[in-house]
Image (cartoon, rainbow, N blue to C red; front, side, top):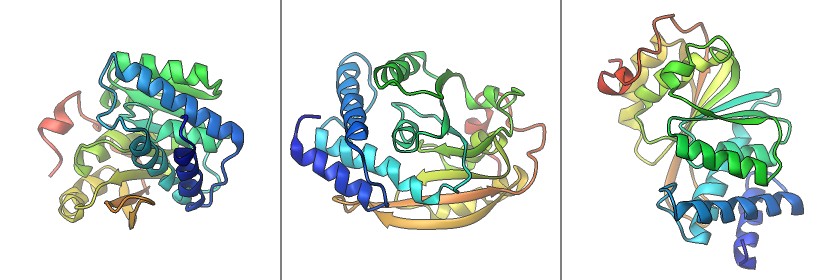
Length: 241
């Protein structure tokens, strides 16, 4: 990240959420952006390529979650992480977090490992797999304080992907766009069946960007029934209704 104005945007945007970035953290974000630009020439990681837009719509957007993370959060899984958002920015600003980045595309996992190595990040892993399969593994099922998704799937589908990974008392943090009211209504049955309850729906706009965003917090109140998640592809083809 070479443009001083974009570094200032990142600092100011982070400060809006109570985060004071150190020089080393700025360096890590810069290296992250460089890797994103480099790899985006080879594989399609993000349609957002302008440096300023990446800083606002990926980096700062990822940091909006920080205000909702309980102080005792230790283990976080980012489901469908793609190019590492929000998992890597969260790891950069919260070094104590143990982070798992889950993605179904091996090429993206190779990119994530390159970013992790380049930034010398520790206690973070990029995991190649589908949420429906990983959530059935003993090491991951109901093992995380926070499950998070910034994916484009509907909330109903995301609940089946993420809630089985979250421990009782933990949170599923769903990062969504502007129009979510119908999604929330459609997801009510799935949330209940999968052991969750809506804790809050938070509306905001990003600094330097007028687009509306929502963060939906779903508390894991009881164990997810053993039949969920269903086999790969089923949650998308036949959502819980």
